[in-house]
Length: 116
Image 1 (cartoon, helix red, strand yellow):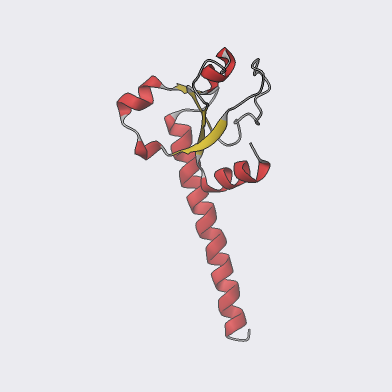
Image 2 (cartoon, rainbow, N blue to C red):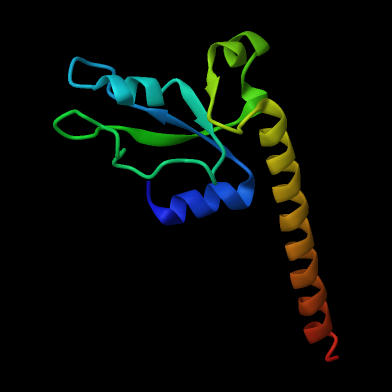
């Protein structure tokens, strides 16, 4: 995964779900990876270091908690310290951080506009 993408996910508090081609060329490690959800800080880089296939064909996608039913969530595995609660907390903190950042930019812009 590109570092820029991870940073964007981290900034937005978005969890990461890995996907793959789901064919006979996908190794067992990558199949397992596709069943897990990671916070952006825990997400392994791609190509996946544990891949035993000829070439890792995994990719990342954002995982938005609210877009899944409890039944779907219960079928997934949470990476190490990742839980529904940590994802919610990360999303809330990212929102607050972004809000404060935007608020500071707005204050700065307003001061420049008013000539102060």
